[in-house]
Length: 437
Image (cartoon, rainbow, N blue to C red; front, side, top):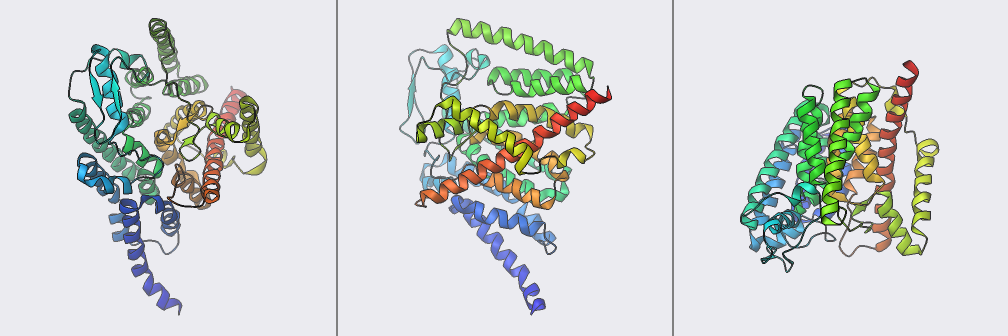
């Protein structure tokens, strides 16, 4: 009987691959159900064949290509929506990128009115996305929809290059990486084509090369912080790493750039008479992460004081850190220096963002961190980690509200768990270095 079942497994796996592909393209909301099961198979003793793995790791290229084709063809509106969760699908194509181009075009125009393609949304100048000082001075006179398509093609191509690089660097975790690159948060990012996709790409290459090219890499992170405020977390992480590991030149560069950033940011805020940061603080539990997001949702749902709930969630994180789960397993591993740079820079970036309120399309920025430390995780922990990123964001049309809420809470707890593992490593590493010195 066992022999018969084993003979049937290759056929079953082919069926699962077809089901996985169909769900991703025609009913994306159900992808998470197959995704975790998929990864479980990939780490089992009777995993996929080499041919099946070879085909699976090519799937993100197919997915991105279909996304792009549906994005530029109004007749494929049903396909465009089927590749997204219903709770963030606007119908508009690459909405955030169009919005950024409208914002920079308004820097030098006060009269134009712009309609977003395939949607009823519009903006009139003067208007600003209020991202950061750099977007307030960039001159732009092009065609918004044409350049949205061109930039989307460039970003998707670069994502493909990054994906291939990571597959080559971590051949034992290829299915894990494949699932991350078509995960709900990555899909959300691509659907909106938020400029966080550019931050993901440039921050990775900057941090990967920061020990070899400290000035160029640090300056890239500085420019990203001027583009959008949150990459400043990378610089703070590099400063902490440089101080602990006595990289004096790197430390001097990043402290200087931080000072320069504060001067530029303060000057622009004074001129604009407002802080250059987005004014919305999202709290939709199905689409957001961060303590402030969760606190706002609980505040609105239970009518509790916002700061009381905020502090309560921090207290929960401390309990999670010390009592409920084992978050110290990363500490006992011998981690190479290049990976430690990733842990410090991305870890402090994650810390600052998790204290705030963010849409889930920001999550892919930390995927390089996830991939660089996943080799040090056990298979059981890897399943928890991939489940985390397959549940954020979450939403199934016409499903029970209690089911959606249960899935959301599970995803958020697992995300906080991953965060706790990273922060615990940084804390103990700093502590051990101080004792040694």
